[in-house]
Length: 103
Image (tube, rainbow, N blue to C red; front, side, top):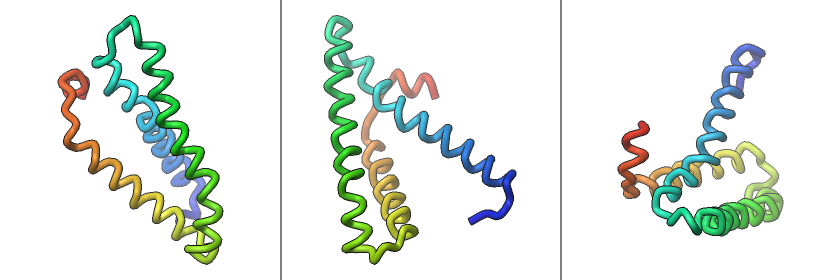
């Protein structure tokens, strides 16, 4: 959507910051709730719970793109954005006192 290298750099920095928060905030949200002696095991199980859906989406995105979206990559990105917004809205009810202190 941009033809300027500077704007592309700015957009990619923003994507990098958001990607880092996508990957770290869920772990921060559960870290306070897990007993310290079980932290490694529980974080590993939680990581699997995050990775398996990502793998499923990776394997299924080509099928969706080809059969449902007529190879329209922009529609696939739009669909991903819609699901991202839905996921963000689903986190609203989660209350974590420690995270509120950080923000």
